[in-house]
Amino acid sequence: MPGIDDLIPNAAQIRKEAALKEAEKAEEYARLAAAAEAEKRALIERLTKPSGKSEEEKIKLASTIIQRAVRNGLTEVQVYRFPNTLCTDKGRAINQQEAGWETTLTGIPKEIFQLWTDHLKPRGYRIGYQIIDFPDGMPGDIGVTISWED
Image (cartoon, rainbow, N blue to C red):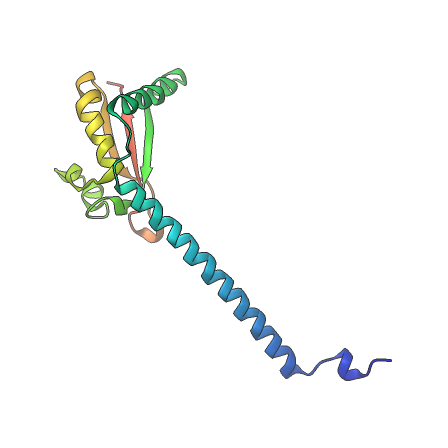
């Protein structure tokens, strides 16, 4: 028959085991957070580089997105969403609607603006870049919208 010490370990031992468990949890959380941060950095790095798509591929993609929106009765469509870190000023000029905000764009968001300038604007389409979320009250992601209504 087990003795009381086998059934009820002393409090110091329990505290030590609990502290070890907490440390393991904290370590796992830190590892997951670091992995998520590395993934985010890799994504942003990829988005800052040119897409590698040809002009024709970009036009076809834009056409597909716009036609699908029209079929669904929409007059505008969000075509892209990206982290504010893809702007040289983290989206400040976009948020303030300053003239020349488009010069702060880099990577794929800049390519989208150029595609609009070259092919969509002459056909009467409008483009909008705006902050679409504010985590902790600070500008976050930016949405790119193409619209065609008067």
